[in-house]
Every structure is written in C-alpha cells, then in structure tokens.
Image (cartoon, rainbow, N blue to C red; front, side, top):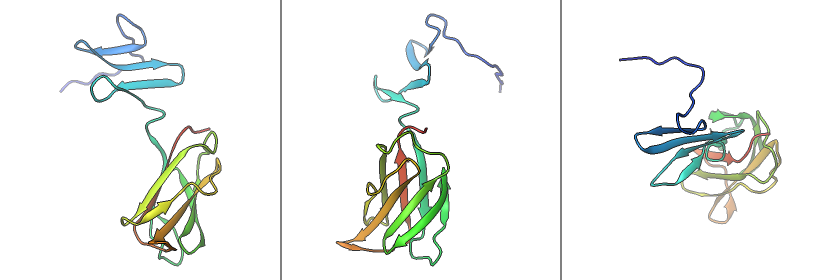
Length: 142
C-alpha cells in the first residue's frame, strides 16, 4: 500500500478540475466544490450534505439526543413538539428540514430560524411523543 501526502492538488489541464481516466470527477471554485454523481450529474458538496441531524427518544422525560451532528440541545415544547437547537447557525431560515419517527408523520417546517428547527411528530392526526424520532436540516451554514 502507498501513501500520498500533499497540501495541494492541481488539475493538469484545468487547475480546478481533477480527472480520473477521461472522467472529470471533482471541480472546485471559491466556496464551491462539486463531485461527479450518477451518470453525468454533478453534486454540490456544500449543498448536498446534512448540516444538522438528531436522533432522540421523544417519550423520555428529559429529551436528549441519542446521537446527533451540529445539535447543541433539544427542547421539549409539549406533546409531539420538539426544537433541535443548532451548534452552528444556518445562513438563513430557508433551509430544508425533514424527519421521521418510526414511520410516523413529521412536520419540521414550523418555527424555523437560523438557530433551530421544530420537529413536530404526529400519529394519525394527533400530536404524539414517539421513540426513534429523528430530524435533519440541509442548507447553507452561516
């Protein structure tokens, strides 16, 4: 096995593009990097990654993350209503949020700010505290 240690990779024909064989796989510019995805589609590394996620037991008396990324804390706002508070803020409140709770319906878009998003859990049409609750935010960090 070989190890390559370096500080900078520069494309040979185009300084901002790295090619493997005849296929360009990575392209970079200021504050932006794309990678070749399926077929000829390009995926933005910055836009395509979850910037926050959390997994928690909504039935617990004190709601704390079982596992998380960029989650400072959880707030229990009442039955089936939780706020995931970010460690690092989002650039604006127009990010995408989603979630699930053991295949139950979740609405995350209510009360979004750059510092948090709400995770609302419903079973049928009633707010419900559920184990295995999860939420995520995708967008730009500040």
